[in-house]
Length: 267
Ligand code: B12
Image (cartoon, rainbow, N blue to C red):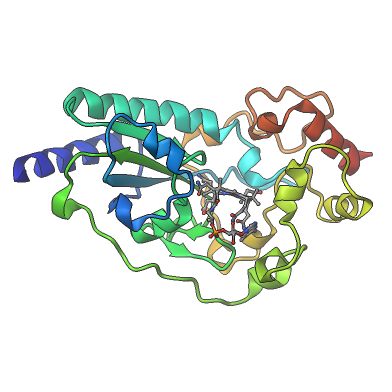
């Protein structure tokens, strides 16, 4: 048992370093909040732990920007899928008797909470995981597994932010104080938008997503650009109607939604 824990500790460290992953932690799945149980039930093993890790994505700012910062680089789902593929292949190669499945975003667990109990940051009043180095401009990923981590797994107490109130005050729809729909959600809605929602998008100059609660957060005052080349190349701050979307984060809602939104912003 101790041997395998030491073995996996070393293996994880070298694997994460190879992928330039600076922040990771292992937590028992029993401590996580499950949001999609069917994804767990369909696995052919019973996962007991989650290896949580962070992917910094801040691409840098531009006055041209009309999409959320996370949507400026190529689609993070592509990066995360490939990264998780590499990591789980290596783990399966080394520990073939155990199961490993990687996720980011489409995860069975509430990732911000899982990352907080893994000790990777604070849970902000804006619902985001705030890391000490990269602020909240990090994607959250996790690998489910049944390998026995023993004392390598540790559950931290969830630490909240300082509740300075900046995100709650700045949220344009009052979502963070129990009000209306998050502006990010509004930009993802298919079909016809209300005049009120179109006006909100124009006022906050967003054709996709919303970063307001992150941009006003003191923990994001001096954001560090992502050290990962994927998030520093092929940056599109201001897409045009009919733009290529198959490698963009707005792809999943289809061309019609992003085109509609760009028309709302650019006229
Ligand atoms: C659904 C979802 C959304 C929804 C709902 C947001 C939310 N906070 O739940 C929408 C589309 C609005 C959204 C927006 C964004 N999201 Co999102 N989203 C998710 C997703 C897939 C699931 C979240 C979830 O279901 N949590 C579980 C439920 C049970 O949590 P809960 O707090 O108890 O549930 C309540 C809240 O969801 C609340 N609620 C409903 N709508 C909203 C909207 C807001 C703003 C808040 C605070 C709460 C809230 O009502 C629920 C019931 O009480 C996660 C990935 C994951 N698997 O965790 C990514 C995730 C949370 N999103 C992420 C990102 C980056 C964003 C955006 C910044 C994108 C953008 N720039 O537009 C915004 C930020 C909005 C915000 N302040 O949270 C990242 C966060 C990274 C981080 N550092 O923490 C995640 C973790 C994806 C990832 N793998 O990196 N998201």
